[in-house]
Length: 403
Image (cartoon, rainbow, N blue to C red; front, side, top):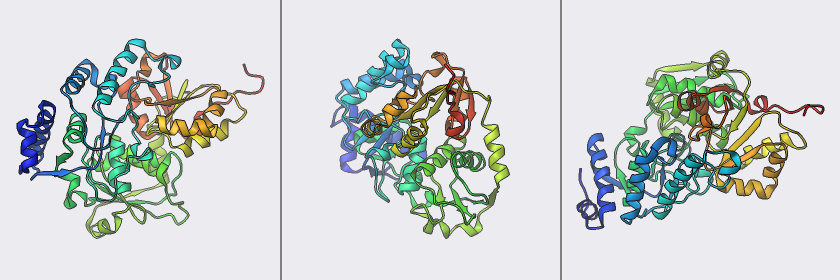
C-alpha cells in the first residue's frame, strides 16, 4: 500500500500508541483486500458496542485505547448498546450486564465519540453527502449510506471503523471504488409493496444475491414511491440475509442512472406477491408474542407517531418496546408521543434493540417484530421464537372489560 508522509508518521508511532495501533489495523486490512492506499473519511459509525457481542475482551481493548489517549478526528457515532442507558433498571435489564455496558460506552465517550447509540445515524445528524467516503460498520446503516445517500463505505468491522475514526482514513477498496458499485442482479418486483413487504423483499433478495449489488425495478404502476422508512427496512433485510452493502432502485436512489448502464446484461429475478407471502410465513417461528419490539433499524419520529396515534386512549394486552435513539425519543417526548405510548402500557426504549439486548435473560419467550432483520437474528442471537408481521397485527389491545 502507498502511504502519504502523514500516514507514515501515524504508522511509525509519531502521534502516539493509539494512532500507531489504529493505522497498523488499517494497513493490515488494506493489504488483505488489495487496497492501493487510503482515502480520507468525513464520518464514522462504529459497531462493537453491546456487551453481549464484545464481552470483557472488547471492554478491555477499548479501555486500553482510551487510556492511551485515543481521540477520533471525524464526527463519529456508536451502534446500539445492550441496554437503555437511562432507563435500564426500570425496564429490567440485568444489573451486572448494565454495569459492564456503561463502562463500554464510557470508554467510547472518552475517545470523543457521540454516545447516541443508534443504527440509524442518518436520522440524528450523521448524514454524509453523495460521493463522500465514510467508515461505517452496522450492516443496515452501511446499506443505507451507500444506497440512499450515495456515500461510500465498506462493511467495516468494529475495530476497523474505530481505527478509521482515529486516523481519519480507511483503505481504498471495494465500495469506495466505481467498479465496486456496479449491479450484478436485476430484481423486477411485480406486486405493490407496503409495510413489512419491504423487509420480506430484502430478505428474499439477500438470500439470492449474497454479497452482490441488486438493482430493483418496481413494475406495479400503483406503487407508492418508497421513502426513508421503507428504504431502511429494505436495506436492513438485504444486509442480514445476505451481505448486501449497496442496492440501486430505479428512479429512487441517487446512483441508479449510472447503474442502469449495466442492467441489460444481468441475470433477472422476478418477485411476485406469492413469493413475498411465502417469505413472510417462513420468517415466523411462533404465533403469539409476549413482547412486541419495533425499531430494527431504530424507529423514526414518523414511525413512533403512527403507533402513538393507534394507541391513543387504549391499553395494551402485550408488552411493547419501540426502539430508537435518544435524539428521536427527545422529539417524541416533546410531541407527546412517548406519553401516549406509556399511558397505553408501552415503552419508548433508547440506545438498544431486541437483537443486541439480553432479552433472553429477561423472561421473554416470543418476540413480535415487523423487521425481517430482527426476525432473522432473534432466533439465532437470542434463542427465542419470533412472529413477523405488520406492527398493527402484532399489537394486542385490551377489551373494555379485560383487566
